[in-house]
Image (cartoon, rainbow, N blue to C red; front, side, top):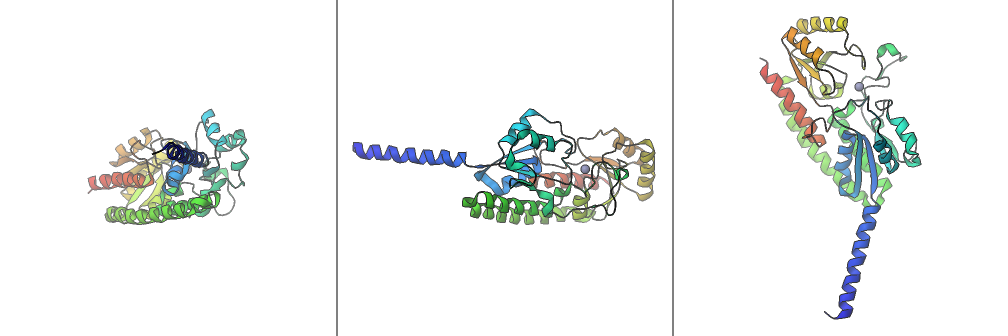
Length: 309
Ligand SMILES: [Zn+2]
């Protein structure tokens, strides 16, 4: 190789490096309000976007303690994806405000409310009053626990990313098609595992599971919380014990962030079991994607049902 060729080679290498850096710098920054949204964004965004999230999967998503680091994440965001239906109303709006990032304000192009693409349960009819509970005034916001809604969120993300980063639209569409195929295959496995237990009645702590239970054939009879967001009360707990005995209910499903003493004492008095199910990716550290979330929960349920006769 002569000197000119060597110089040209080096130049070509520098150009390639510079292009790589430019591509990395121009990658869209997506922030999900929860780890579930971030997990779905990773499915469709692959290595063409940067993904971060705010609420950790082991936290109650209704009540997240704000931190300065959350504002920094939002300052850098090109796209903010939220669950909506007031799930984040107690903590996210002030953070968005403090970020002073015009791209991600509600109504802006970089603000995506995933609930508008999904099937929502428990939408109140008529006038909403505080008597209905504190935290679900617009319908049930735990809708990501139905894989069909996961599919719809992923599709909405692929479409949104294609609009915002058109050079990669074929890539995002391909990633969505692959996700859709893997999800369909996984649903067959989950359905087969749950098939023997369809129609079983359960109690859940919070109303986190209507979408999940509808999808997998479980019947939610009542809740440990008297109303969504209201802690257990002695009178409701007593009533619940009566219901459980009368209906022969064996499982009480509890989210990892609630105190387990009331569910435990109910289970002791009724001969049932407490099962800690994860409502979110990141609920335990092994559950790092959307598929593992359902794998984990369905395995926990199958194990618990198998212990019963
Ligand atoms: Zn809730």
